[in-house]
Length: 235
Image 1: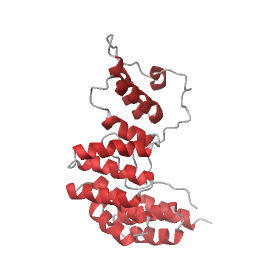
Image 2: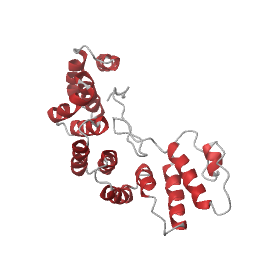
Image 3: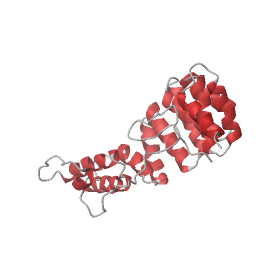
Image 4: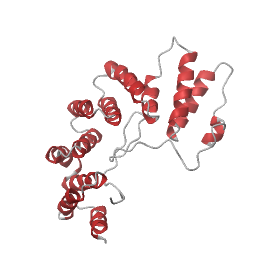
C-alpha cells in the first residue's frame, strides 16, 4: 500500500480538538518527549505564570491547557481531574476534559462529558461536530453520521462538519453520498482527490486511480493529485 503523501483539505476541530481531514488526531507521543518525572514547566519549555497562595487549582488548569497544546493528553487529563477535585462545588471542567480525554483515548469518558455539554448547548454546531468526531473515533460510525448531519443542519455552511461527514461516508465506500457532501463544501477536484486518498488508505488502488483521474481532469486539480498518480504508476 502506498504511503500517504498529503490530503488537500486540512480541517481542524474547534473547541479544543485537533484533527485533520484524514481523521488523524494530534499524537500525544513525540520523539523528543520528556521523561515522565519532568515537571510541567520543564515539559512545556516555558515558565508558568506566578500564582498567589491558594491558586493551585488555577495553576493546574493553566498547566493542563498548555499540555493539550503540546499533545500531552494523558498528563492534561490528570491535571484537569485534580483541579476539578479541588473545587467540587464549582462547575466541572467538561469543556476542557472532553477533548483531552478523547486525545488520551478514553472515549467513553470523553463522550460522557460531551453529552452533558451538548445537552446544555444543543445549538452549538462546533460542539456537536466535536462530539460527532469523538463518536467516530470510538468506532460508532452510525451515531457519528447522525451528529455530523445535525451539526450541518445547525450550520449548513460548516465546512469542517461537511468534510468530516464526507470522509466518514467515503470510508464506508458510500462514494456518491460522500461527493454530494464534499463537492459543495470544498469543490469537485478536492472532493475526488480526498476520496482517492481515503481509497489509498483503505488499500483500494483501483478506486484511488479512478478518483485521482477524475480530479486530475479538472482545471482546479491540486498538485498532490498528480503526485499520487505518479506514485501509483511508479514500478
